[in-house]
Image: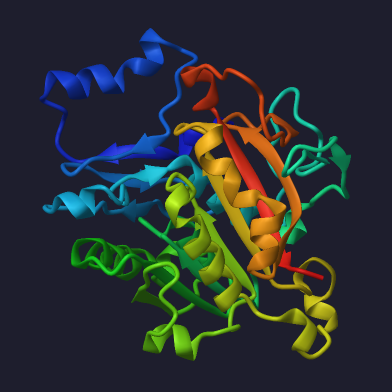
Length: 331
């Protein structure tokens, strides 16, 4: 099933000619994929066959140019993909793979800094099970993966984004509307907190209180600003739990759950060159992090190895693809 098939617009019919053109691109150009969803006049409905009712996703309506440059007033495909992964993990569902997929997510990992392709242990849905875990989303935007975590058994969920009133107000609205028992398969939800956090700013009360607190970090489509890569790595390292200093995991949290992870997913729509530097081994190591797994996946579930450089990539084609990185503390 296509990644974008769960999303539909909710609101008044489109009236602007540009809106009609944009909504018909998939018909005119069948290989073109929408990688950003929604606008100021429309909210979104996220419909999953495994949830009792659709989630109603509000979008920010930024009135300041600085806020618009955050691009948090859209739902991006990276969030859709991580939401499906979280759902598959918590509900023990198979990960949806398209024709030509590897058969198991993460079966191959490419070079970070330009080496030969390596092979790693295949990843399974269990690796994305958040039940009983503490979760933080950085650069949350609409917070869809965090909403799924709160509805599917996470112990504690915090969503954060740049401390802009327009962005944070929208996050609070999404939390209030969707984290209700009627949206959860089990009829129960986890309290979800909204916090303002600018990456790299670690002297705030929120950062001080939550250092090393989280088992899982969600990072979706946050790599398009190379100048913020260092700050983002610093925030990930700051909030990620130090598994080595924690008590030995119980049987219920052993294996896939036993070590703190950051799940970093990003689309290639802004170009591979702009976002790949985030995964440089030396830069991650300077923050005390390393890549456990990394691979590429398209909007139809087809998977391939991550590579540092694919040469010229057609804009329409690269919009279909995302990188999926699993980070952990450096061993």
